[in-house]
Image 1 (cartoon, rainbow, N blue to C red):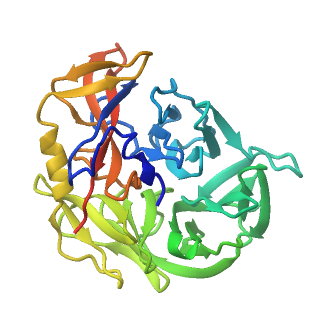
Image 2 (cartoon, rainbow, N blue to C red; image 1 turned 180 degrees about the vertical axis):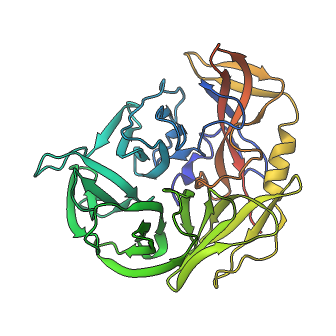
Length: 393
């Protein structure tokens, strides 16, 4: 499990109880007010923390890097294309990768710098557009790589693997249909099988392509969705249980469930807010009334009855007081008080369509909003990172 040694670095002397917060680290003032255009943070194996700002409808993606020994970078930015931020792709020892618009971007945990990966085809020189990237970094002794669906110029789409160290493509596989116009609806990763998943719409056909760790299409699964869905209709990513059930939140509301036998939208009797993969299982999170709830997904793809999401409830109640934050925007860090903190992501802590990081075995990372001021364009809000204890039913 990555980042298991970070408990001391997080300011926690012992295991965090469910919903209990660790040390708050104030790292920046960011455009917007809660709920903000922020994703759940990610940690690399060295313990550096990455906070990613942006959303699908904007091009102003930005990432802040918090070093394990204190201090944060001012935020780097790299983006290309019409669409905005899709999310983190994954992590390695001392860096992470994210997907924004048509670009795959590497973020260096040592320097805080952003760098686009494989912007152009090394053979033809044409610009490559990353239509879809699986949220998974595969590692072998000789290379680190990820899986993508790309298109160059006016050419046909291709599945390929990206060597992240050499910035080179390999194991290129043409899209099965001779088409130029396709729409990616969402991507995911079945980590237990080291398999990547691409949900694609073309010529009124919708299918999920399962791509194995050698870059070959191992299965094509038909999907039942209303016609003409919007591109990237899956918010965040499809999260897969170890048993092979993929679950995602749809932009139209509701839940999408996918297995090797098929996929489609599923109704649930509460307001869906997120998907959580934890301990090899997948859960749907949301609210019933105003109370956070969580529902396990069975190995058969059914969504079980929801129960109170006690970690989210406790974390929210804990914020109903003044908190002390370490202001790490300068050196030395200073202690500050925030009178009315709120979750910076969504309406309730720990509920998001984007993956939650396994910060330790018993906690994840989250972002908290503090005081704000009016910039004349939109509010600017103080934001801090903190680990928070997480327990699932």
